[in-house]
Length: 330
Image 1 (cartoon, rainbow, N blue to C red):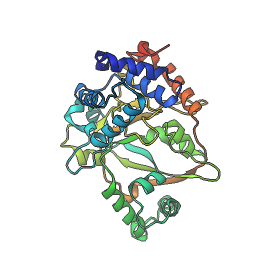
Image 2 (image 1 turned 120 degrees about the horizontal axis):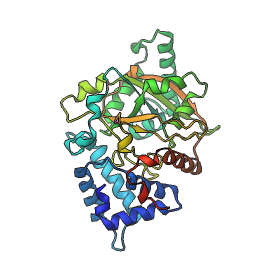
Image 3 (image 1 turned 135 degrees about the vertical axis):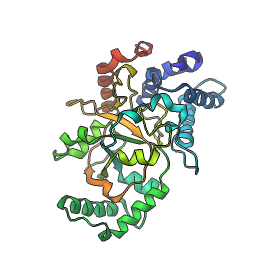
Image 4 (image 1 turned 45 degrees about the horizontal axis):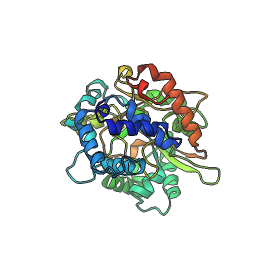
C-alpha cells in the first residue's frame, strides 16, 4: 500500500500498532494491513492527514479527528448532490462486487434503535422503547401473516422521516443465507451482534439495548444506483464513519488474496464459535416498513479484552494471506 511511501506516517502507524490502548493499536494495525484502498482516495486522505499534522509530529487524537471528518464529509456526505465516495470513480478498483452479486440476494443488517432514535430521527415517539414496542407489534404481525401497513400509521411516518434524515453512508451488510442458521436460537440477537463484530451495541440486565434486523433484496439497491460507477463494494479502512469512540476497533480489512468473492469477513467476538461472517457494502437506499423483520433486546456488552482476543484470533486465521502482515510490530 502507498502509505509505505510516506515514511513518517507509516512509522507513526507502526507506533500506533504497538500501543497498549486497543483502539489506537487496532487503528494502526488496520491501516498497515489494508491492501485494497484505491490510490485516488488514499491521496485525498493523506492530504487531509498531513495538513492537520501537529508541529511535533503525528498523534492519534489529532489523526482520529481528521479520520472522523473525512468520513463525515466524503463517506456519510449529507450535502445535497454529494455522493458517498465509496461508490464513485475514485473507488472503482473496489466496486467489482457490483457485477458479481446476484441481485436476488437478500441483504441483512442490524440497526441499533438507540442510534436511529437519538442520532437520526425520533419521529412521534418519546423514547426508543416506544418505537421498539411499535416495531415489535409490526414484526409479530408479519410473522402471523396479517400485517397491514395502514394499521401502523405512526410507524410509517417514522420510517419516512428516517429516510429524510439519513445521510449517504454505505450500508454494512451480510446475506440472509449467512445469518439464517442462527435465527432459530433463543439468543439470536446477541449471537449476530458478536458474529458481525458490532461491539458498539452494548446492553445490561438493567439497561437493555433494542435492535432491529432489516432484510431486503439487493435488486432495490441495483435499481436505485444502476447508473453509478458501482453500488456494492469491498470494505476498506476509509469506509467507516467513526463515532465518539474513535476509529472502528473491531473492523478488520480483508486480505485481497482471500477476497475471491470480493467481500470482507467480520471479526467474530465469540471465541467459542469464531465464524467468518461475510460483510460487504452497498449504496444507501430508502428503507421500507416491510424491511423491518425482527426486533430484540441485547443485555450484554463486549469488553475491550474480548475485542482484542477476537482480533488476535482473526489475524491468526488469515495472517498468511495479508501482504503486509510482516510490517506489524512483533
